Length: 57
Image (tube, rainbow, N blue to C red; front, side, top):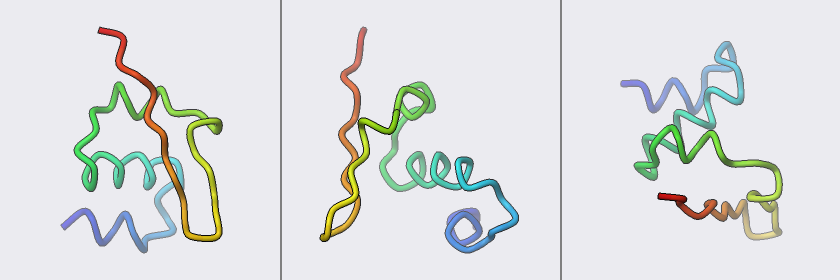
């Protein structure tokens, strides 16, 4: 299974782990994941919040 590897394998680049988990856990397409920037992600006391960019088509 790939999900456990993405969660714990620190030999995989962090950005690849995050992108893979977003795709697996939230069923987001790669084109939407690649549009994410730092302004779309906020770290709060309760966790991490991701605001997805709007689709353009």
